[in-house]
Image 1 (tube, rainbow, N blue to C red):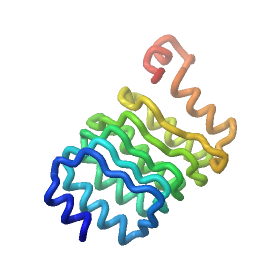
Image 2: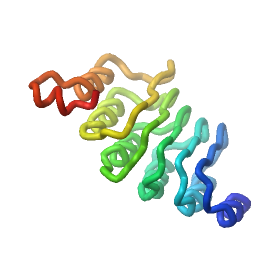
Image 3: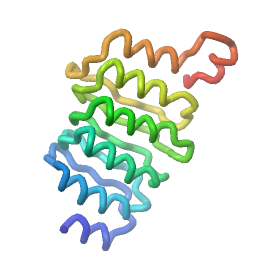
Image 4: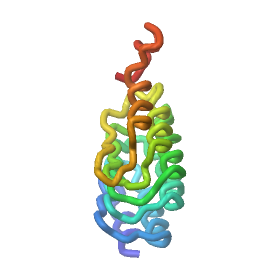
Length: 165
C-alpha cells in the first residue's frame, strides 16, 4: 500500500530500485501494479529479489508498454528458461528502447537460455549491454557460441552487415 500510494502521488518517477528483497508473488504483484502506472519509468533495478520464472513472465508482460524503459537489472535472481523466453519477447519488440539488461549471477541461465537470449538480439539495434557473468551461471562454450553467431555472423556479406555488432 505504501508503494502504491507513493506512485499514485509521484507519477513522474523515472527509476525504481529494490535490492535483495524477497518479493514473492504477492510483493511482485504489488510492485507490478505500481510500476505500470509510472509511464515515465526509465530504470528498474531488482537485483537479488527472488524473482523466479512465474514472477518474471508476469512482470515482463506488465512492463512491455513502458517504451521509455532503458535499464532493467534482474541480476542475482532465480529465473531460468521460461523467464529468458519472456525477456526474449521484450528484446524482440521493435517498440522497445531497452539499452541495458543486467542478468549477472542468475544461476539458472544455462546454454539453452543463452541461445534464447542471443537469438532474440537478431534485429535488435537498441540494446547496448547485457550483463551475463558470474560463477553461478552454468553457461558453457555452446551458449557463448550462440552469442558469437548473432553478434558477428560471417556466413555471408549481408549476414555480417546485418549482425548486431
